[in-house]
Length: 262
Image 1: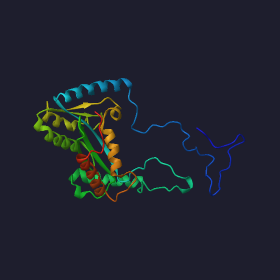
Image 2: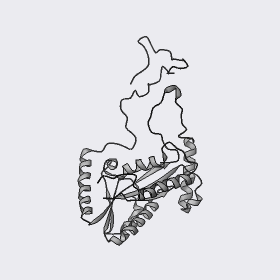
Image 3: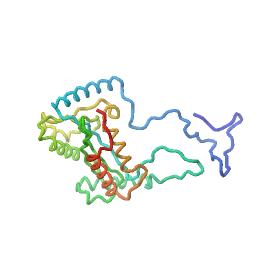
Image 4: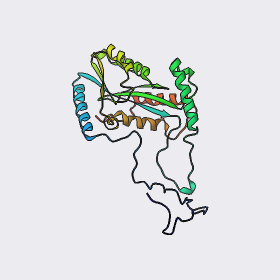
């Protein structure tokens, strides 16, 4: 870490109109040499190797036509999208309102949205909220993404999504294996009845801990999807965000926006 000061003591701040305005007790920007985003912890090398071997075996069976292999995951889309890292002159820099709402108001709107969705499961009743949840699965060897958009994602929505996926692949009469991470939602006991219903034809394959960002190819699709929805742009309400997200996902079916490398 680097402090702004001299041998005799900390220097006085620079108050010149066109010069940088620094506080003597404040850490300088970019003084830290390394940082790691929350939720992107590095996996153990042994777990990463074991996960790669297991996926290679599943992909081999999928190439032979024995199973349908899907890579699934969930993501969150904000009404207020984050800006990409960029640069500009310091004296001309303008602070964009990427978070127009306070944290307390965001919590209140999300709580109301969650309560309405849990009771009614109807988009027409949603009048608040800042987050959309998207669940998707890409079929191995293709660019087909099977997605579902909901205001709030829970075990009941995951059960409905599994039923939709199985209705799509039922004519193939092949077993469906869905690769997922070890989140609590994927291991919820509310899914037991669904697994019993599709016994022998559907199952989860769990990735090792912290390996989702490294072994799940749909993670790259999420980044491209959010760029296509509009990074740095705000939408007026959740309905507009839903329409924009749905348009991007449907456009991907006609002309893929992300090239999966198999």
